[in-house]
Image (cartoon, one colour):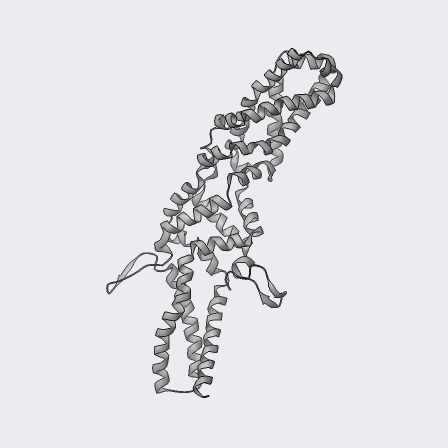
Length: 372
């Protein structure tokens, strides 16, 4: 009932059921991202690990090709006759000048992204949007991180039910009023679920009672859970591909485009001499400015499709899985509890109430069996 069904089954809104976690996917995602951004990930510090020069080096081959294509497309569109008449050696000089500027453009671009990453990368929006769209992934995070705890909840009904059942049998021996079995079943069902949920997170620190060590089941598995959680998040949510896609297509993409345009235009202006002078001579200053605008647009359109060449390096440089695992291992028990607690906290009373109702029904079943 906590996780399934993933989508609502029944007649909305009055009759039916959807797993508690999938039905609150957006809220669960917001709680998860609050933990990530406040305790586990410093986006600015994370992206400081990326070396702009290395990004420029990885992009060099594709940017060289792009520079040539960009010049040909713009010149053929804006000054086709002039470009056809331009000697081969002159064209090659213009190409070389353009290509020589591209590493600097890529490096400056990455410096701007790195220094303003919190503005360009909407981390919260990325996580919430992805987890809300993929409810099975939200389930997976809780199910894998709390795998041992969910096993305990299933088996605890057997252990606690048996112990409480002995007490119930003793009471029944002295007082066999018909209502005691349904009432006892209701109490046992409620107490079993309540106690199981409490034992998952409490006590926060290990205590010793008459030689018996007691520690919250989830809390004592912190290193193991940290490794699993970090693995899922880095591999399926905060991937390098998704983060860069968010940078170029997110809420701040307009500002990103403006910055990239500025870099391209400056790069073109820095090609002092042949390329600039020829074009201004034949087409005029106004046309030259249009050329710069077209080149900038072409570059911005092509970059998101080329940036994938840097992903292997960026992934190794960021090393998000290790960063998150180390940070999570250092969380206090109260902070660490927040990783799994939302799965139970949302409508927890329903789960306990269902346990009580099922216990009451079991008591009625016992009553019917005894008097049959």
